[in-house]
Image (cartoon, rainbow, N blue to C red; front, top):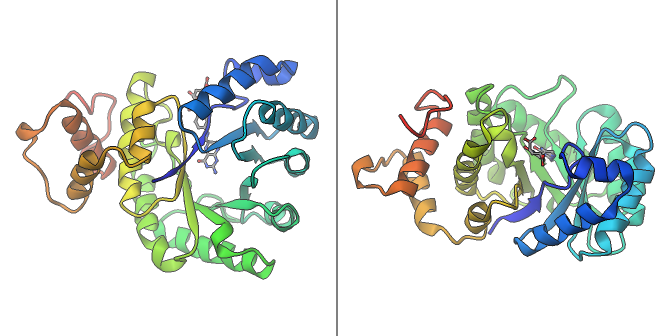
Amino acid sequence: MVVCIAESINIMSNTIGPAMKERNPKPIQEMAKVLADSGADYLDLNIGPARKGGDELMDWLVKTVQEVSDLPLSLDTTNPVAMEAGLKAIAKGRPLINSVSLQPERLEKGIPMVTKYNADVIGLLWGKEGMPRDANERAALAVDFIFQANEAGIATSDIWIDPIATPICVDINQVLSGLEFMSMLSEIAPEAKSTVGLSNISNGVPDDLRLYLNRTYLMMLMKYGLYSAIVDAYDKELIAIAKGERPEYLKLVHNIMDGNEPDPASLDKAELEHYKTTRVLLGKVLFSNSWLTT
Ligand code: THG
């Protein structure tokens, strides 16, 4: 079972963005209810950098959502003042701070809030020099983050490490090193939890094709014991996979990852889609938008 953090209450959205700016609760509360009914375990409240008035917005958003939902909240902003305002407004559920990275100013402001508000925290593996280049750099950043958090009194089991997923159409090597790092995490820090923003992988891909990448990528990460994922909770099949309801596809994908390739002629349509998508995400086939049909 993978804990599902619903991504859709997000300032970039065409419906939710304007509702946030106009302080119109209706569309946001409707969405929160649908996401909860879809099987979301957390709601991510993403207001982006929110440089101006972020604190007032996050305060309003938390209260608006908690009027209709009991789900725990993941507060997603790089503005520390908005983060704290949201944490103060949370009336139910243990908060998840999304996120703190190893950039000095994010770390200095973020870590004290984790203990002050008794929160869980997503440790984003973004270092002083930016994006890690490979699995070993991710491992070094994870060790550094956990060490610094532990020093401040945060238990390792309250840390959700995020290796940072990036679009497959930008760089397959980043996808591969993210997966390799996930295979190492249980040895680096067995008590640490993990999370991945699944939809990042399919950013820039036509909408009707994104879900195939997101679903298969989730199954690949589940091989390494992924604890949680930030997901498009409107995709019912993705939620079913996360809840452990597709063991036969999981086995197929994990077999391919272990080098036990099935005969494609023996696969049905859905199996073939997972087969082709696994091979593309493993870098065995060059990615293009026609990967499913060739
Ligand atoms: N790790 C962590 N937090 C994160 C991410 C991560 N927060 C932001 C992001 N990545 C996860 N959230 C989203 C939210 C929306 C989309 C992708 C990731 C998305 N939206 C559609 C689009 O942009 O085309 C549709 C937007 C809409 O609703 O109109 O793809 O990796 N810790």
